Length: 319
Ligand SMILES: [Zn+2]
Image (cartoon, rainbow, N blue to C red; front, side, top):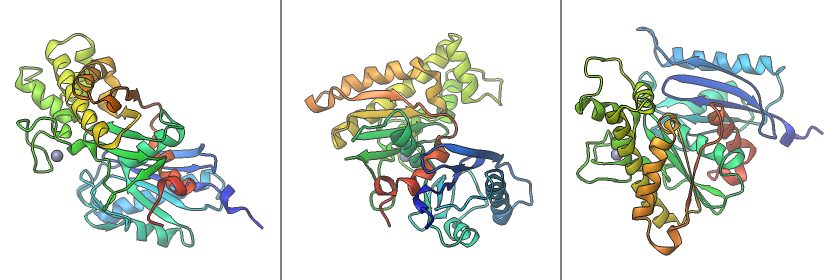
């Protein structure tokens, strides 16, 4: 009899700017992967994106030699109805209440299809195969165009009521801070997401004539010594540190792993982060929490998506 637990998984990562798919071995190695942009033409509707995704999945399965798979794991931008896998990614407008899990189940019948948030997938990957390996109590954060996260307690992914436990981006870091896309004010995301850094820096006079300037440009300028740009990352690090201090008090964590595009600026973010974390996390049990940088590459989303199937006892609770 064939050992199904040895079969690979089809893994999918749907983010704001790209769709990635891969075939991941039962040991967690990415055997094949490929990606496609999510840039849309004027006539691209929900089915056009689905077709693009399905083609990408078929291509990676062909490249892997059409193996029998034991399941499909997906990380997708939120919001979504979880675990139903009905998705409305903020940055993928044609998909509103798109039945992603049902579509994948129809395309790949007789195997489980498990859809979770894309930031959660990255955090799961860091816990399973990256900077959080072997740690029982960990918060993972992705600081990027948004600020997402995921929570592992007692060695298991915590989902909460709607799959949003660990969504650290909407912890309030400054009640008088800028408005947040969620409708609130002063959330970590409202201060530390890449576009918020750019907005703040512009208000202070940074590259005011350069409409196309991005968080990447801001990071380059910060690393080159630009004072406003450095201050923008300092503000972000400060907000993230406050958010982490609150999360540590609530969840009694030993480790926080921080990744995402904004974190790639390195010490300019992590030094103020450490400073504010140590300023605010003063209760005895919270003092020795460790902050580490994420260690996996751009395939992290695929690896984490695969883990929803391959390590379901740790990372997939709905059954
Ligand atoms: Zn918010």
